[in-house]
Length: 142
Image 1: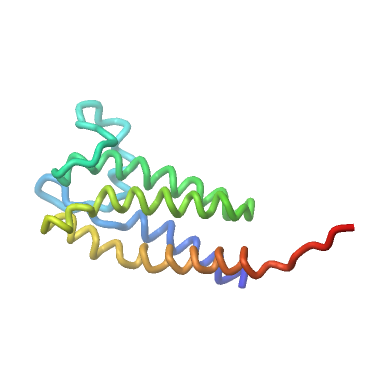
Image 2: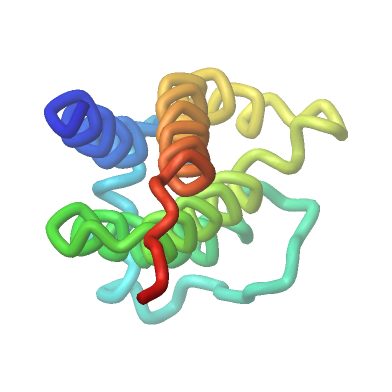
């Protein structure tokens, strides 16, 4: 089960990097935006949810990046709380990116469709972690 857990974690990291975003007149993976956001000083940035898709890209990229780093380190530490925290931060970043689907935003729908593999694998990891926590053997007191 540990091997499938690692494959699932690697799949989540890769799929979260490959979520496609529509910016300007093109399409790019989220990984490119996560790398470039610190170097773009004039980019409008706010953690407040905005109606405009492009205004949410910065906050979404930062949330996704922090979640990816936490998930990466939690893989080696085997810390359940850190893994769950990383998943929640990744989900918050994804929500920032795609919350415009409710209003019919085409770019948000495009990002949502390319993020479905990420969502599927992250829910699987969440279920795996919750089952692992709920069904772990109880240590007896001496």
